Length: 96
Ligand code: FES
Image 1 (tube, rainbow, N blue to C red):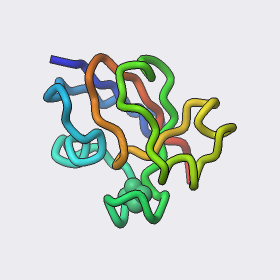
Image 2 (image 1 turned 90 degrees about the vertical axis):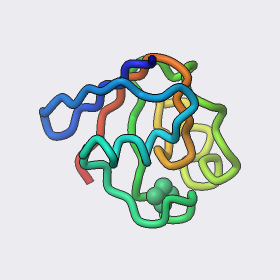
Image 3 (image 1 turned 135 degrees about the vertical axis):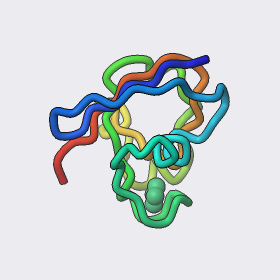
Image 4 (image 1 turned 180 degrees about the horizontal axis):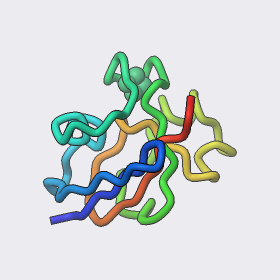
């Protein structure tokens, strides 16, 4: 099972994800404090920075290109609600 690590304000959260699961929904079920509102790619509140394993996530969606742009995606930013996890991933929730 994929290992997911998320750092938020200096606290490291770790869990084993179900392969193919939605990054945001599974993180919420693990009590990880990712801000979110819509869960549908509309609000852009759920952005995270992927620091390792970006190739273990699903391809960016049209909604992610819209909100983050090519530059934001190239910097590792993703909308957690638009990502599906297929391997080990490390991410940081940056201060809002
Ligand atoms: S929760 Fe709204 S874009 Fe992800």
